[in-house]
Length: 73
Image (cartoon, rainbow, N blue to C red; front, side):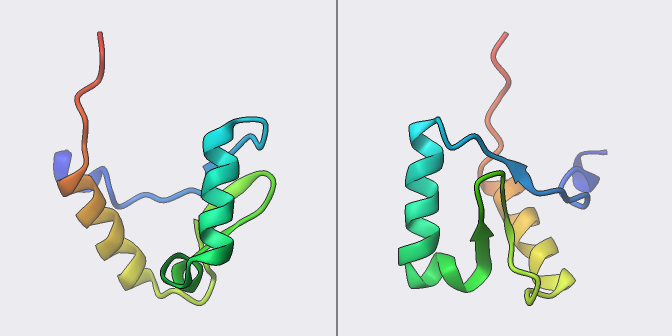
C-alpha cells in the first residue's frame, strides 16, 4: 500500500487568506524553477498541464520518499 500512495493526484486546495498560500503563489510566479513546473490560482496549486504524467509521477514519488512526516496524535 505504501508504494501506491503517491500514484493518485489531485490539485492542492489553497486559501489565499493564509500567509503560506500567498508566499507559495509569489514563489510560483517569480521563481523560474517553480514556474516551469507549477501553476497556482486563488483556489488551487498544481502541476502545469504541459508536464507529462511520467514527470508528475516521479516528482510525487520523490516527494513521498523524501518528505513523509509522521502524523501527530
